[in-house]
Length: 475
Image (cartoon, rainbow, N blue to C red; front, side, top):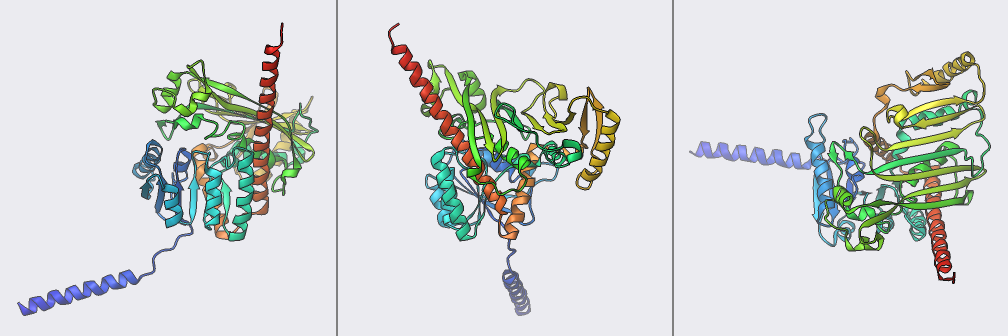
């Protein structure tokens, strides 16, 4: 018995020693540990659709209790449990009315991910950089002029504290957009940027979205606040962020653009009207919440100012962005994108409509009468250059224009772009800084969108006052 007891003690001592050695092993350190604050948009989950070796598998969530956070966690669980390439996220969740203060107090991570209600987003960004926390934010980071001033302050503090602010510009990773930009840099194909005016911009971009859609194989349920421009932001400051960014990115690649380089020329915004039945389909709610009553017409139709248009001058060139939201896409279609980049030799055009089976397709449209065989020689030489980055891209001729043939392996889709942007952000974290042109782009594009919003509000107010005055005048 004594021998047995001694053996047990010896084994126990050995196990204890092993445990001490194990505990003494240095814990793996990660470049980034994510803290997701108040996730209210499915983009917050798409950041975690895949794993990253530099990112801690334990991620933290701070949010008020409710449907928004549950939908976020359900998507993460879906990614963890999928059959093909499952993720392995361990979500540590805090829900309570003091969720924001709790996150800033505990700071279990070093990167704040924020994608959701935009009403407080800019203040969250400012608070994060004040506490030396990196920021990875869904667009828009500012939805009005006051937000923009706060954002400028946040960038100054971020530089002083050595932390990074970056927004998730997924559309830079769409292959047709990449190739449109690349071909515009080849003078043999594109020439130079054509002279532009407010009525004939150098680049025109139009994006059509839908409130009712499928995401990650499930019907998307949107929070009711998404339809409140005081919380989500109007369309002219929301999706327009992407379009303005792409116009800048194409016209002036990696240039140090400043807000003073931009001038707002024309703006307008208009509403998409939703019936109670449509609202219920996309939110699950039987009636409009109180904060939306201000936008309900005749107690029955919700007016959502989700549509906006901006014509702006950037240095000596003009760009135009248009954002349109419909309720639901026709069967078989998706969100669409149109882009025309005007050159002196050809226009580079992206179409995504019924003519392309709702797939984004890049066209090269030479000007005037042209020799097809000479153009084919020119394009073959141009694609030899393109192939250094994008092998096997080809072209064919149809209906008096050239169509760029893009291998399916490059058509990864919108959701995959979130992983690509996140990898770019992680590269910047490794380097310890974001290039100056990226910072300049963010501040300049948010100047353009918020200034356009303020100008359009002023115009709408003046038009309404003029209409009221006219109605008051004796007939």
